[in-house]
Length: 185
Image (cartoon, rainbow, N blue to C red):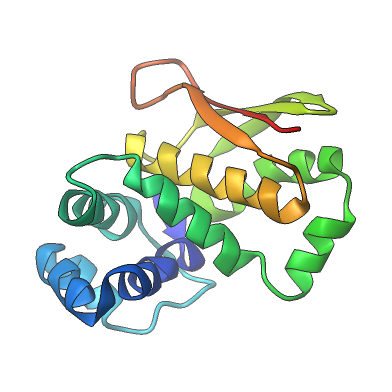
């Protein structure tokens, strides 16, 4: 059960930008010693890291410290992560493709960042889309919120007007799959 380096590398960047060096120091002190060791070392984009201690637990701690325990704070991390991941040539590629093509690639993107992970697009219409994730390393509301935030921001980067992405089914909530439903104008 692992997560790829870029998905965790964004966390300290987000904390420092939003809450300053003091916030980053507070967060680093609050996460597990193993996670702190990872976050104070070089995070390699090509490496896989244990998802519980380097992604889920640090995201939960961040929500506890800065969002009064609300897992919805993870959406902001997800949106920030989309900006981080979709820059430069990737941003241009996202903007140049059709929404339908971009939606079709989303399942592949998830499977590139998480293992094990199976996901598929189940709806792709001109102003709506839905993706189902049937397997995820460790079901978590924090992960689902991060994915929803990432996807919504990616739709904005693509040029969709007023996108909204909701978690309509939740692996963490006991459903047989997580479902992310997006709509835009």
